Image (cartoon, rainbow, N blue to C red):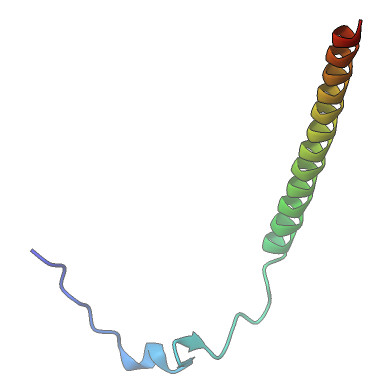
Length: 74
């Protein structure tokens, strides 16, 4: 059985144009801004940790390759 469609009252659509609200909130919630800033810091930290881990892994791989080359020569 399909869900029935609900009718939207026209007064609720006064500020909608082309599927978008023409009037937004009067003020952005400061907690939202703070949350976005904290998320950005967390993502930056993840990126730095990833770059550091990649660099360390590359260094270990190079060291291993050098050791293998030396063993092959000797």
